Length: 167
Image (cartoon, rainbow, N blue to C red; front, side, top):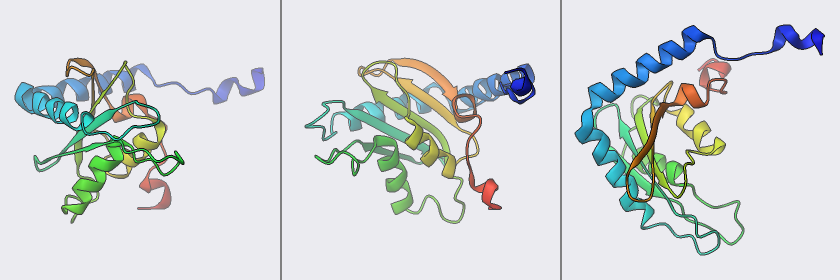
């Protein structure tokens, strides 16, 4: 095991401090009204979820860099793998309305509303990375109470992104 000790990676204290500063700055700049609107949207979309198999409803909303809000909910399939996740549905809605034109990096914040304290899954984080170098991630309970506010880089620091393909 000692031969691998130089390959162990954890975020540095400087990285953690920088991310904490980013989160606080974004929260302050967006303000309570915008954050509340995002959470409210995700709660509303959660009520629309189609989950006859898992009964695990998720609602999500995203804020674009130009201030638009888009929402989505999960929609299950009996085969499970074609199930649409709430975050992906919100991203698709934003794409459908042209939010990704002319810049693929259009996500500023994402709010997720679900039972418990879970945030976006790995697949959804990867979808978010496609459209943001970093953004706020707001997690709310089913009543719309904010459980935590973090960032994409804080919860997915070692991600695969378009820059790895020279894009």
